[in-house]
Each structure stands twice: as C-alpha cells, then as structure tokens.
Image (cartoon, rainbow, N blue to C red):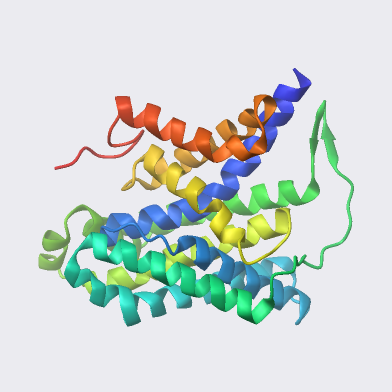
Length: 287
C-alpha cells in the first residue's frame, strides 16, 4: 500500500507538470487548428532561459520562471510569424510537419549554445517532506504549487478577460468572431505567445524537478501530446484531466514494468480512451 500511495503522489506531481505544456498545446490547436510539435523545443528554450536567469543573473526561481515563459513565448511568435504561418497555406498537415522541423532546429540551437552537459538550478538544499508513508521532495511540492497556480491563472484569463473570451470565440467559430469585430490574426498571435509561454513554464518546472539538458522538452513531448489527445485536443479542461491521467498511469507503470515502457502505456491509454470516446474525455465531437 505504501508503494501504491507513493506512486499516486508521484503521478499527481508528474501530471501537474505535464498539464502546463498540455494547456499550451491544446490552446494552440483550438485556435489555430493544427498540432504544434515544436512545444517540446519551446519547453527546452524556456527552461534554459530560466536557468540562465537563475544561475548567471541570480534571479529568484519565480522570476526565472517568468523569464523562461517570456523567452519561450517570443520564440513561439517568431516561429509562427517567420515560418509556420506561411506554411499554413498548405493546410494543417504542412504546418504540423513544419513545426517538427522547427523543433529540431531549436533543439540543436540550444545544444550548440549550451552543450550537452547536465545543468542544475541554483536551489538551496532541503529535506524531503514525509506525509504519512509518502515521501515528497520540496521541489516537487513547489512545482505542484506553481503548476496549480498557472492552471488557475489560465482559467481566469480565459473566463474573465475580454481577450480570453475572444480566444474562446475564435476557437469556437472564427468567422462569427470576425463578424463580431474580433481579429483572428491578433488572437492567433496572442494564443501562440500564451501557449509557448506555458510550454516554457512546463519545461522549467521539469528542469527544476530533475536536471536540465537539451532533450528535456523532447522527453515530455509525447506525454504532453498523449495528455492533450486523451483529454480532447480542443479542450482546455480536457488537457488538464488528460495530463493527470497520463502522469498517474506512467507512474503506476513503473511498479510493474521498466521505466522504458512509460510512453508505451501513454499510447495504450490513448488507444483505450479514443476507442470509446473518439473526441477525448472532454473534447467536442467533430462537426
């Protein structure tokens, strides 16, 4: 029972970290209608920007996370404006393929600039916290708190601000939103910035929880994609639900199988969920 509770706790923490970039992926898909596979590399860019702010300039962790989000968001806009928007003339598939190419370029730019060595944030040492039989690291608790705060902020932005409501309107019906005076172009750029910034935050949280290398975003890409698909590609709440489901499923996998099988379990969950609910847990059926 102790092992099961430990796996559940680890799964909840892992799911919260996956939920942040999954929100970004789903937001971009909902508004721009294509899967942006550059999110993994954007997470890496944001993580390295945060690490640089923390170690080179002495920025506190929260400030460093903000810096990583800003750099990732601006990088996402640059990719969209310079390359992906033009590829959109060839349809969503062309943009998706272009995002894969952009991901490879960004990953190698980071590798060239920072090398392949592992890096760690400048954090004070602290003992693990024991909650009954469950051991939780202080950085896990901090990451969980930040992730939950980010999710709450995204909900408030989409629900309570005019720009957030405009994003939801464009995602639901871009032609009707245009008739109502909403600029789909502006909303698209804001969505890309917000989505990429969320990926940067997610990559930073993963780097804070473990260590940092140029593949940190690539390692979570498939899990983030699985979370978004399981929850419903066009559903923001679904991305959160899918992330927790994938995070818990992957952690429980380790109890019976080698860690190398974690991703296989993620895609097994995709297969099972989509077999009974093709639109995902909270996704909308195709119209």
